[in-house]
Amino acid sequence: MVCPAARSKVYKAGISHQNQYHHQQQLQSSTTLSSIFSTSSTTFNLQDPAEGKPFGVLVVHSGSGVQNSGFNAAKGSLFAGLPSQNASCARPEDGQTATFYIKDGALFLYDQSATPQEFYVDRSGMGQGKIGYTTGAQQPPKNAEQKGWSISEQNYLQFDGSSPIACPNSIDGAYSIWASAGVNNPAGNKDCVGIAAHVLESTNPNACKYTE
Image 1 (cartoon, rainbow, N blue to C red):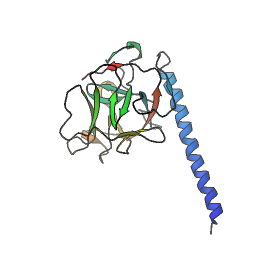
Image 2: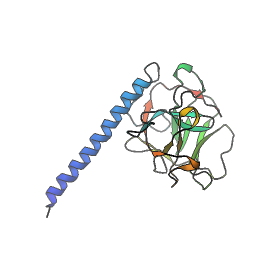
Image 3: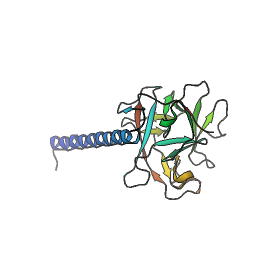
Image 4: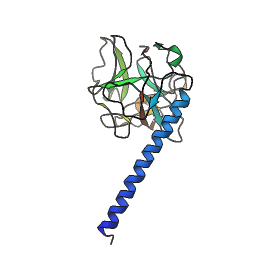
């Protein structure tokens, strides 16, 4: 029989190991983002972004083709590893990946214009976890949800407390990004994988208008 004191030591050791693991993942992601943006003036740090603060997202799924890919926004959808977003940016040379911010539980693409681009999630039987975004006064689909986005204690972007799914073989070889809706391979996709969407605050964000 394990005594309470020994059990407490084992529990604390386990928590310490988990914290070390998450810290290591954060350091690896920070290093990877630095290399991705080595020619960019956009910079990132490990701080959990405050409400309304811009951030970038890096995919964590060891051993998969989407590992260490940045999130992209194009054609009203969310991707990872897209070669070109074709966005109109204040600094075009820095437009390889998307920049986001959260306000009141809603997720937006970062820009300095008066025309917001806001994300929605459709977890209905038709949408199966579809993530898209609207521009300006454009209305989201009938069953769409716009609130429910958050950043976890480990700095992972989530919707309704769940991490997203990445599906290969989308446009230009990118992965399409879906919300968790109880469907392993949404919309007829194959070989989709669950991912952790690691958030890193952007200290010099690039304002962009993304394609609709």
